[in-house]
Length: 136
Length: 46
Image (cartoon, rainbow over all chains, first blue to last red; front, side):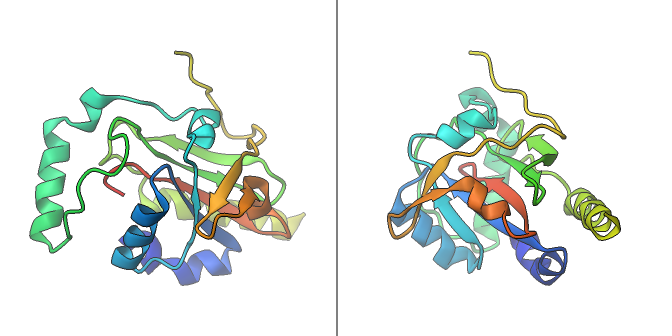
């Protein structure tokens, strides 16, 4: 998320709205926003209808593999506050780019909670989408 | 359980979500008016 914040000016130039979707509580989501200082739209999905519609996986085994514990340790050593596990820790996430016509241009489903697409990959797709709209 | 396997070029599903102030928001509103959307589905690490 820190990386996304870092690129917020470029994302704006690429006419891209970042939408963060969480299945957690309103309280947890607000605490997360306060902690990360992210200025993105945050929407809640308590029934996980969107997680299901976008085919995001569920795995307690992969959610708690050793590399995830190590990542938690690294985050806490870097000063992140432990707020406990919010909601169902087996639910995995993902990242999707949807263009202004409602067409998916990039789909990435996380294999575990540490697995995220490289920022360079996201920006490359968005630049391509932006160029195709400019040339249309 | 069979998961949906959305791929690039598929139409993005529109789902009703909830804003922090409790309003129902269609997800499709996020990619209107010439705007693209980067949807970030959180996991417990954020």
